[in-house]
Image (tube, rainbow, N blue to C red):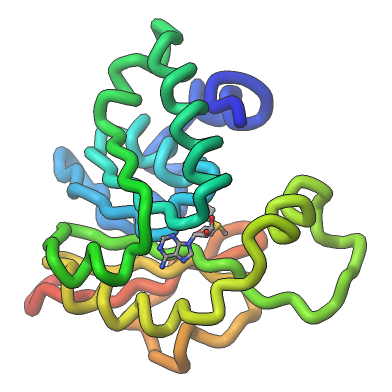
Amino acid sequence: MDLASGRLGYRGAHVSARKEPLARAVGIKGGHRPHVVDATAGLGRDALILALLGCRVTLLERHPVIAALLADGLARAAQEPALAETVERMTLVKGDARPWLQEHIGGVVTLDPMYPHRDKSALVKKDMRAFRAVVGDDEDAAGVLGAALAAARERVVVKRPARAEPLGGQTPDFQVPGSSTRFDVYLTKTGQS
Ligand SMILES: C[S@@+](CC[C@H](N)C(=O)[O-])C[C@H]1O[C@@H](n2cnc3c(N)ncnc32)[C@H](O)[C@@H]1O
C-alpha cells in the first residue's frame, strides 16, 4: 500500500477535476468541494483522488487487514512533503459503514462495494485477485446504499462495473461513464441537477 508512488503516485501528481469522472460524479464544480464519506474505502485510491482535488474525505473501512494497510499507507503518505497537506484532509474510521451512516450525515457518500465475480477469469488484475481473496464479496451492499441515501445531504455515488446492473436494482438519477467502470449518481437534495 503506497499512496505516493507507482501508478497512483503518477495519477496523483497529474490529477485534474476535468479529467476525473469521479470528480464529476461527486459534484465538484467551480469552487464547490463537498465533504465526501467514502463508505467502502478499500486501499483509499478513490479517496486520495478526491482529497487531492480539495475535498475533505472520511474513509470508512470494516475489514481489519485492509483498514490496517490503509492506516499505514496514510501515515507514510503524511511524511511525504508533496502529500502531507492532502492527507490532512483524509480521516480514517475503522468499522462498518452502515451503523456509522445511521448516526452521521455527510454531503456526498460514495460506495464502491466488491462486485461478485462468478468467473475466475485471468482478466481480473493480479492485485484485485489478491484483494478479493482477503475481503470476499460485499453481499450486503444494497443495504449500505439505503443507509447512504438516508445520510447524504447532496448525493450518493456508486461505482459499478460498466455493464453491471444498478446496485440493489435502484435506478440512479444519472450515470457518469468511466473507462471500465461507471458512476451511478443518486441525488438526495431536492432541486439539484
Ligand atoms: C472494492 S473495495 C474499494 C476500493 C476503493 N474504492 C479504492 O479506491 O481503493 C471495497 C472495500 O469496501 C469495504 N467495505 C465493504 N462494505 C463495507 C461496509 N459496510 N463498511 C465498511 N467497509 C466496507 C471492503 O472491506 C473493501 O475493502
